Image 1 (cartoon, rainbow, N blue to C red):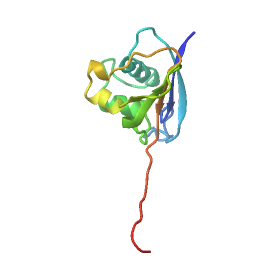
Image 2 (image 1 turned 135 degrees about the vertical axis):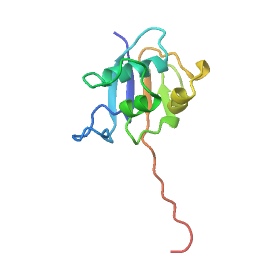
Image 3 (image 1 turned 90 degrees about the horizontal axis):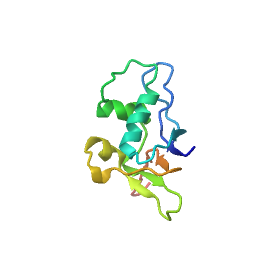
Length: 130
């Protein structure tokens, strides 16, 4: 059975206090659905990760969707898809996809796509004389 992988700053577990997701990288195996777009997979992932919690049956808010699926350290603007047969990764701005959805930003998933959500890269620059 074909699948799609979500890997990186995924919030599969919450801390013991139940408030903030762990800051870690995870891999989630998602069942492939022919013709499904990334936005639909994100909605499904929200439902799966919310199982057993008190969430509304209505569509989740944008903030709820982001906080339930991704860790607080996820770099959603620099996500990308690694696709079999493609030489270069396909850039995906998940934040823009969720907050400012347009059909053009959405990507139809293919079997065994790997959706990578990187962690924020914190850089400190020191200049001048020390």
